Image (tube, rainbow, N blue to C red; front, side):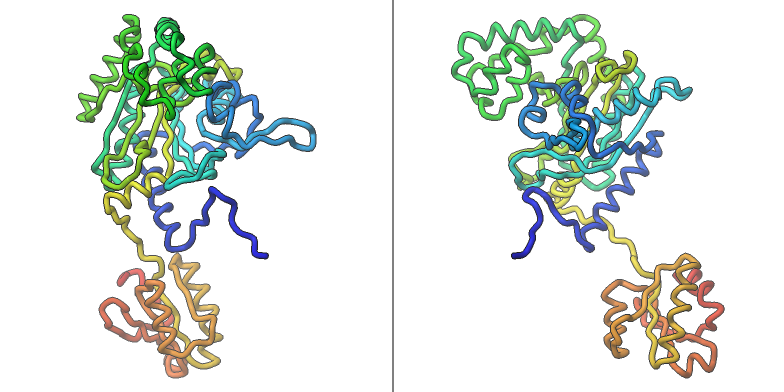
Length: 422
């Protein structure tokens, strides 16, 4: 019996991994421009972290987490999202005491959710996310949104739709919560089991239900925008103005609530409108989470961030027919003929690699023609041909595999030649 990969996971093989590496490199370049620094947190955390931050009433906590007990009887969970762990690290390591504020961070890493696998959605998936913690300035909200948009656009995506909303502050949310309960309660029996449970615990999440999205009461539900107090409304208007000033187009959607309990004020999603992308169009989601730092044991510090799935980003690139550039992987390939040349190729290969070149040679005892094919197959720029004549003369035959030109180059001059011609 052969052992196969677990359902909802994938192997990312050579030939495909280069796309992931290109995206990661581009994301890091953009983060450096925006002065966001990388952070790496554990793949598993204490379960309580996600219960307190993500929320007991969310689908993630109730249905999707991979939770287990370790040998000491402690409940641990594979991280289902990145924000909670970053905020925990921010509080635990007292980053709020750093001179540079706000603290601007980004991360890459695997996340885990037990849900039904489908196109672009896996049980282990890779997230890229950013968090800006410590500022209540609405311009930082706009900056975080602009960073996500910049990444998508620089990768070549054009068919994007930015949707924003305000969830308001505590008092605004309470007023809206009461209105939602009053609206749904008389007919809550017509809704799914999850929505019936959410009515009293978190009625805002009823608006995010996929099963009852077409129910008549969903369309007539009270809008959060009608319950924003003056402070929340002013904040939202400032965020919108900053986006307009940066020429970033957006659509306001009062039904956008996001799926996590910690959001307040600004919430946003970036969606793909490419034909054939699929029914689930969301590429990226995020928002403000004032109060979350305090919830996990730190001081009362505001924050905002987003997370996106690399898998869904790749699907969107494919839907729009965007080909990511492929960098030359190999500078040169050594083709050795005869026992002495084969032995000589070993230290020569090491020397070239120490000089900073990507280099390869034959390990399969192939004939000369097959070695040339192997060099072309891996995309080598040059072939270095070594035989008895080359060893006697002290010159390698160097062939440019793109132009077909070739010339003899002294072995000692090879690094300089490859550097100047490459």
